[in-house]
Image 1 (cartoon, rainbow, N blue to C red):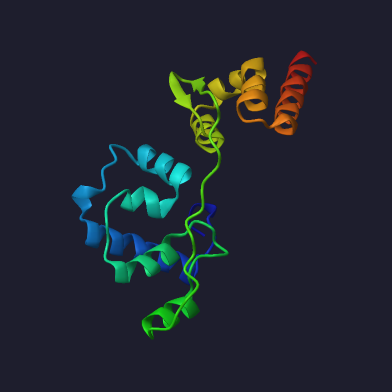
Image 2: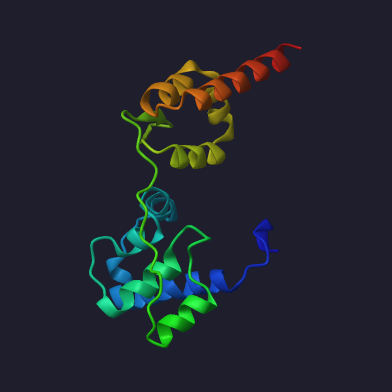
Length: 171
């Protein structure tokens, strides 16, 4: 397995095919992200289909397969059966693009960047381990999770981790 990501299957191939189709239809120059990090953030916050297509229009006939190939929920992503149905002109259950995680009511500032989405913040934490450890120990993160995301149970878990880390450090 490459990088611990598993062996891959037809769903992964169809996802890559969907991205290729979108780029060919929309034009590479119309998909504007300055860095891979910006693309990643857009995919997490809006979903792959929306991140790639944005507000650009594509061929109506290609909308259904693009959504099917690019849906981020693996349970809903098209496989061989759905692709075969579409190719033969039969109706498929086109996945709806889900509304993504609700955003925080106020930003959490980490490394001078405002975060409104806990997934993108978590990703930033993985790229800045030392700073993220300090953030987890501070009450600011716990308060942001509790108040801005409305996730009291998660905030309690973060607090427990911070307390455990402090105890371990003092031993």
